[in-house]
Length: 219
Image 1 (cartoon, rainbow, N blue to C red):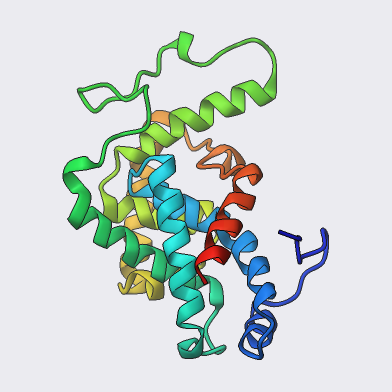
Image 2 (image 1 turned 45 degrees about the vertical axis):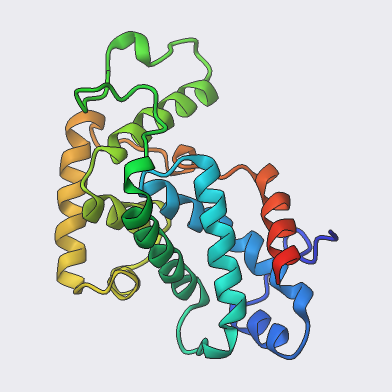
């Protein structure tokens, strides 16, 4: 499928939504590619493995497309889409809880992460170190209770502000702040406040084409 969005260009989500509503269906590809990373982080924050998260992302995009008529541009499309993804994840958690398993090999059966010196490679390559640290951090985040984990991902990794996070999760802004502080406190004990956002829950661009193709086949 032809990539509609030209590298470096940026059209506001609200304008793209208006064009889609007016019949420019192909413009939906821009929204899919633009927000795949956010949806991926949300899905992984629930502990779902990569393939399951991709399925949930597709379902969220499809649900968004089918309900664009209900979307009001007063709200941000991104937060609206994340709320749809959260609902999909909550539903899966209830329906598939017994099948959900950890995707992080460094989390032991005791629920603790191995932070021995040998775990962090000292080969001198920053990229390798960041990748390893990202993997270890994923394991730490996975050990947080869901209410802390999701707030941390939305605020620190995806960049939603307090109001947006509260709106998406249907909790008060005060609760967002409390949960984020608690999550940071727990993670800080292991990571000493250092976590490279780009390395955590990365959704590789090679998967975007597959998501776009699957969604467009169904809408």
